[in-house]
Amino acid sequence: WNSKIKSKIPASRRKDAYSINSQLLEMYWEIGKDISEKQEESKWGSKFIERTAIELKHEFPEVKGFSRRNIYAIRQWYKFYSTKYQFVPQSVAQIPWGHNRLIITRIKNIK
Image (cartoon, rainbow, N blue to C red; front, side, top):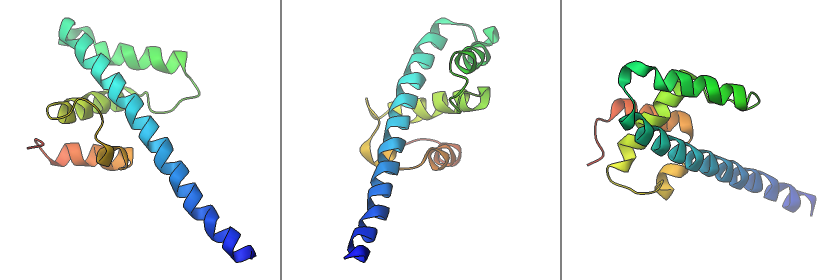
């Protein structure tokens, strides 16, 4: 009986991890979209991404993932997938962020 209960815990933890990852990527999608739209209005020389990273880290110091490098990656990831999709594809949302970053650095387009 105990082993039956114990066997359910890892499966539940995996589901939790997938759910958290999916929520993170949905948030990154929205951030990437907003940054892309705003950046089109802004000039490249205005250090827009750097300022955005500083402001987000200041406003949410307990949240990791708002470095300049990661904000740039979020924007790049959004631009990569938004050429074909309006929302985060479900299959993409199941892939961890680190793997998504690797995909967009290795693949030039999503055709």
